[in-house]
Length: 476
View 1 (cartoon, helix red, strand yellow):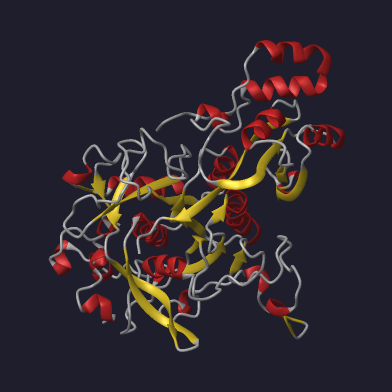
View 2 (cartoon, helix red, strand yellow):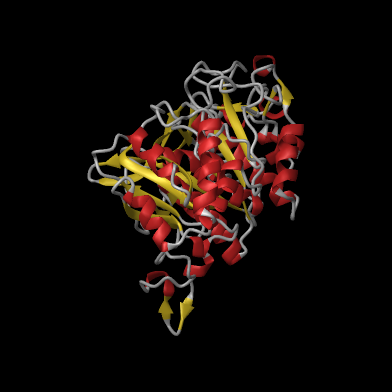
């Protein structure tokens, strides 16, 4: 990996600023003589970072001891206002301060605003509100007609480079009904004929209480801050409707590869035929923001901690932007909750050891970064790679899965052929769920080790991924 950060250990910057909050007069002299370098700058995205972000917005992390006066002073330096509390201190279990989204006045350039507010002793770090995009290029029917090569195996279908899922199915390993997976993406069509049976519901927002269906009562019954979030939450639209129509095709495609219903004589089959799918939508028509990505990651962490559901992994077929300490911290909170973060390696045909791609490139131990291979076993022409930053390869070229399609004025269930590391990633997420189903109580670390220790050595991935191999589900 590219850099190291030990979560929970105070950095020089944090140490200096904590001292300065208590001893402003003397400690500031020390700070003036020691250059303060943020974690973001250490990771390679200085204040002049050109990655796309929302104009005029910054994510700002206050130190835990920052007072109202401290916060007002810091914001005043760039004439800023708080527009969203992304992670309030009151809801954090890691002892951190408020993480907020601010909007500053246009008389500051983005670089100048970030530099100015980060120099305040109440601030741990500030970073652009990066914009992310998904990583796709645009007796189950598609299985039996030869189209679903990503699920095929050498022994069952005489196809060498699929995920070997069909061998696992032949050994009666396809039931993941005890396992939840979070889809952090666009929304997904939970009414699709090949997904409806696996569309999970938030257990804290369903049921009949005093004769009232609480899923429709307009109340936050589970106390997580979101009203009637039955199938998840739309952070892009800030509402409970996680499926908004034809444009939610990418999230729906991802869902079908993870958990399309198998054995129903129609459409496709996912890696897990009966997994429970939940959704945190943060990608809209114009991509998604860093602030909403952090909220989406924390949504699933908090849901698992509040309800006790067996949520083992989130699928993250998206990327972009520079290094974000805020997102790193959110992924680490998921790690503490034993949730794997399966991430697309990206579609820029680059070595991400040399040119980092996030979130796949973060160093959190719960990340599985996935490159894409073709049906002939070669690295897909679009796929990023990295001997340390990409963990393994999986089928990602010409992958059939579920999508919404238009029929007249209606949106109906359909299927589509997409390519991208976005398509490779859900094969691995499904594999995580399958392993967890057959190994109850397995930790995130155990599941990740099982995935990586079972790969098939593949020449095209030698020196291009940390494992030098591709996904093999049959060994579970």
